[in-house]
Length: 240
Image (cartoon, rainbow, N blue to C red; front, top):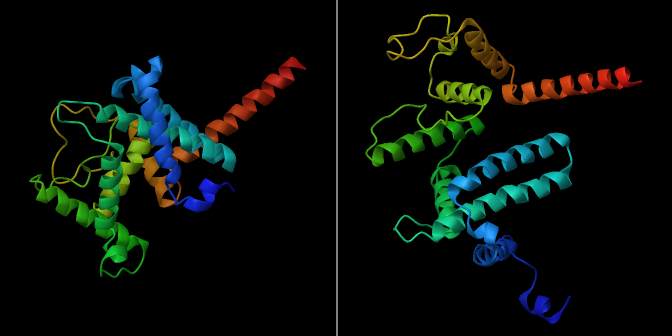
């Protein structure tokens, strides 16, 4: 340990994040590629890095996961740096991003940071949804829907599962997941195409997976990996 380390003591959690911010700022100033990036040009990387982190998690390799989480973190730092450079009044910094999520976590965990008592994880989720709905009303958004904010750009299986989770927590009858059954008190919006028989079956299969405590997206990924292994084994036999 050198004199500087001895004087400063051990790093506090998050100390290296400050170093990463400094590195990113310099890259934006001195690297031609980094300097020309925008939110739009970085968007594909945000998605790709998230999938690579998921793949590392599934591999069971903790070192690979650590590295991929770093790549995901880079995307957050990069987007915040780009935003901080805007001069039109819409900019924000990485501190704004961190402050926003920290405040949200404190606000939505009154059983940790306040005097609320909970009986378990299920009640934590219920409180989270209730607080979120109250925040929406406070912003003048009205009661809204339990499904507000669900991103429809995500993979279809993950989308179906998230919709069903949100609906379940809001007390929506499980039977509405049967798209071949009654539509409920109101018909779907005019002009919305009805799902095909296969689409309805897939949606119901997502509900079946969730009822079994399984994540349909991860289950399909596992099946895809098993299929890959079978195909590669067949190819090896063909080459023998």
